[in-house]
Amino acid sequence: MGDEWKYELKPFTPRYIPPEVNEALSREGAVEDTADKLYHLGIESVVNMQCDAIGDRILVGPALTARYLPRRTSGTDARLGHDIIATQAVPGAILLIEARGYRGSVLGGNAALKLKRSGIAACLVDGMARDSKEIKDIGFAVGAKEWGIGSGRSFTELTEVGGSICFQKIAVAPGDTVVANAYGFVVIPAFLPWNEVLG
Image (cartoon, rainbow, N blue to C red; front, top):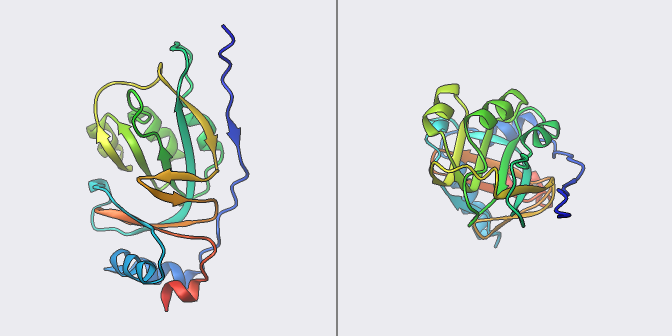
């Protein structure tokens, strides 16, 4: 059968986060304050999600996106594409994965280690992840809509890195910035000037 794996890599140009902006967004309560600010500006940008591995920290970083689709035919060749995602990483990036409703997980312990080594600071999955204890043991911050045991290797494939995605009904676009804590995250659109975010 001609079930060829096709995926697209889009150029990843993270938005520059000035030190003073990073400091302001990293202070205690900044995630909630930013959520309130964007709400008053009419911007839908909040995702509630447990990510215990973040602990008391606040993570601020450029949004690197990945989108998956169900495979049309099951197979043994690996198409989860973690190596491909890692090539697009920049230090401190926060990986957001769109993979909701698919069969099996798109992230486990081995992939988490690979992504951490690439410089990615955290991975947030709109879908399933597995190997929770293993991921915690390596100290990588992962949040997922659900946790399970089944692998998605035979049923899911990476289709795009660096494009726009929908994460729990929130649009995430290239150049956006993510501010996350243990209870969720806020997406700051690239079009919004920093002075409006902090003002």
